[in-house]
Length: 196
Image 1 (cartoon, one colour):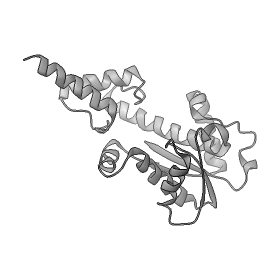
Image 2 (spheres, helix red, strand yellow; image 1 turned 120 degrees about the horizontal axis):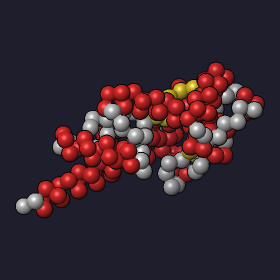
Image 3 (cartoon, one colour; image 1 turned 135 degrees about the vertical axis):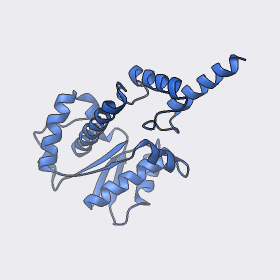
């Protein structure tokens, strides 16, 4: 998982760059914009690998883990205020979660679909997505075809099924706390029980 923040001194900095939610851009355009954003803006990222997320999930929800990561990137940039894409159904609660982990005062504007509403959040989503895609490409060199790593990707599901069939455990690059992995393990367990 990659969490990113983009710091700007004024909104004019992003004017004319045509940033938008990274999911609405092709990979080539994201890469092009990534370079421009990094050149014109302050950027901070936090990467959490599968094991780190699994360890954090022992003590907190995934939303709390993301809130901590949002706080870390905010602290790296030290802004007066920050716009966040809320991953909690309650945007105010999510803002408070993030504030609880800040060491400096910062006004938090937490909204759903903030990456579609605020150019600075769109820019951060591009930085996060490109960084994540590069991590996935590196992992694919080691593990073969792994897909995007998203639960809706049939290539990723095929990779997980094949790996678990062969090794009887999830790959180290997959979160054991991920519902997708739990579901695959549960199906495998059911099949084994049905063999008796």
